[in-house]
Amino acid sequence: AFSDKEQAQLGELQGMGFVVADRAAEERQAAHWLRSLEYQNDGTYRATIVTTMECNLAGAYCVEGGVKSDLSMSEETTDKAFAWIARHAEDPTVRHVSLGFYGGEPLLNRKSIESLARRFHAWCWKHKKTFAFSLSTNGTLLTPERYEKIRDRLHKLWISLDAATKETFETIRVPAKWDPVMSNVKKVLPVALADGVEVTFNFVLMAKNWHEAPAFVDLVADLGGKACNIQE
Image (cartoon, rainbow, N blue to C red; front, top):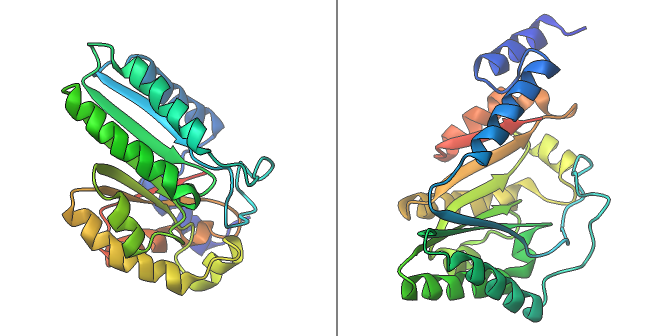
């Protein structure tokens, strides 16, 4: 049973829309989201690119924990990915190309990200289309210097933290350290927001951190963030 304090925290999360009443409500929301994707036709060609299966963290909750490896996109695979996406994006109904870089930790293979972003920027300009990309990262490698190399045409940035305190963060995101990651965030966030990048902070609910969800919202606001995503 939950304590009065825990019940109050759950109520707050439910009021913010982060927690639903039951599994059936969650399934209805998921079905609605999938239907919205099915009927999406806005002239955008979207592709998610897993640049590497390698990750520098050992999150116990990670859905990719059983498939992590040091496998990364080679230069040849990067070339093939560019050619394949460009061929499909040549469709005259496509007006915008949107890439999402994912992993693993995608910044462990920055070469592929920089190569594809640079080439698609030029390709879309030549074909009179617009281009932007998003990046999901755990923040450990997101230094100002690395951000500078990928900032051109970056549209969305997802930073996964999963905690509002140093103690919880270093417990569930081993072997990351809170202070260096916060330093990266505090340096990169204002620059990214000034660039017009949509920055969202992620928080995956689990037994070790769910009680920090309200504090996480406050943390994001204190950092100067505009959006956060709390999910199961």
